[in-house]
Length: 301
Ligand SMILES: [Ca+2]
Ligand SMILES: [Ca+2]
Ligand SMILES: [Ca+2]
Ligand SMILES: [Ca+2]
Image (cartoon, rainbow, N blue to C red):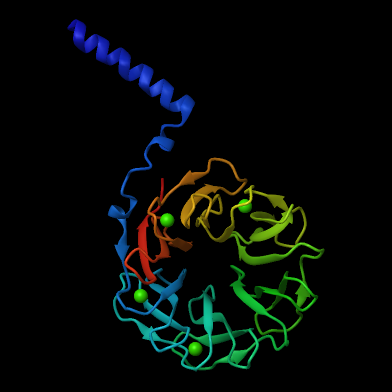
């Protein structure tokens, strides 16, 4: 071994040790993170709120689009081809979530004048209203066993998380108190619910509780807003959006809040992430092109 190669070998060992101690990831802010993105929509209207179908094959993505003049639910193939309109009304529809068997989509709609939870067959037939309050109801999330739907509602005076049977019966409040709780998402194993709460000094953060509403645990901190999230298929990690960098970016962490990794670093806004059922990809929306489009990127290992 020459003296030079011996020295460079020692340097590499020292550099590797420094990286493990000082987190070299923080030095990669100039990386163009969009080089790994695949654009799935291409329309001047805003396209957002993507949600991956779990069964039977993970080959469809539901999303919200304004391409008919107001928010509607659409479905496309997971490669972006064949976009099909599912809801068609003059009011705002958004936040689709698939039934676990892939036949139905729950969503929020203002078609009656106030925001309520509705369900529709994925082919656009059979639209059915599940909640009918005069308050703001939104963000439906189907339980992995298909029997229940989570949602947030202001019917008690501030935003709380509720659960109902998938037919709209037995609406039951899961969270309470003066803090706002919203954006609930069941873990794929059905044991936990991740959600947004401002219970810590008013800071909008993500929390994880048991599916019955017990044992809430705060998993992000600070004054920046963490809001929308998707679980990894093994229920071990959470991909989420945060404006802590000064614009909206995607981050991933373990479900207990450890090991936070900054995924997107574009100056544009990236939000509403969801994980593919095979664990390989993350779908999200970004306004990098000038209007909101849906993209996917490889999931971190
Ligand atoms: Ca668009
Ligand atoms: Ca509409
Ligand atoms: Ca926060
Ligand atoms: Ca960004």
